[in-house]
Length: 241
Ligand SMILES: Nc1ncnc2c1ncn2[C@@H]1O[C@H](COP(=O)(O)OP(=O)(O)OP(=O)(O)O)[C@@H](O)[C@H]1O
Ligand SMILES: [Mg+2]
Image (cartoon, rainbow, N blue to C red; front, top):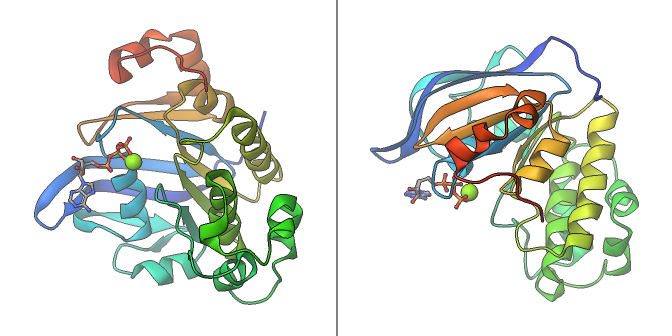
């Protein structure tokens, strides 16, 4: 079982948020413990990305509060949230298409440290260090997007459907990387994942969103013992890659 303590690193209270006046998230409250692995699942369009983007400061928050390590985050712009230890790998694979792999990683660095850690984690990126972002395969772009976020040494790492559209062998490799990151207890990980089987394997807890609301939040073991929870709220049983 993963290492974790009882200290909340992230607290969301009564969040209502969306885009402009349009409200997508309705009254989201959540505490995430340091070292925890939380999976978020739900049908398309229920607000999973909007929730991660709201934590990162990329949406319009109408009410509620966000605290990270006890500090209020909700009035800080996104780049300051990144500096304080939040990292988001967005669903859209946020890389610079015209910059090389090396330059993309350098752009993700905050403070000291080098890009070698990214290459150690993804040797394939080292082989392609001089190639531009646009010349990479989908899987390599995803590796670069994750590695770039990791250059900022986030304590809280949020990943938005990182396995989407990737071959099973690449998914397995990415899962291994997430396992390594989670194993040391230094990273708290929130994973949005459509593949419920992968989400269950990886997480300690699962949140299910529907219509912008939390419809289930509980231990992964509970979901595993009662797969009808997924059937009821996600409309399907366990899905494998
Ligand atoms: N930039 C935006 N401006 C306006 N509405 C948006 C924007 N992004 C998303 N939405 C709307 O917000 C709702 C929630 O979208 P969101 O992307 O959070 O869903 P999701 O659960 O991540 O879905 P998926 O599984 O397809 O990624 C949808 O109705 C979507 O159309
Ligand atoms: Mg999404």
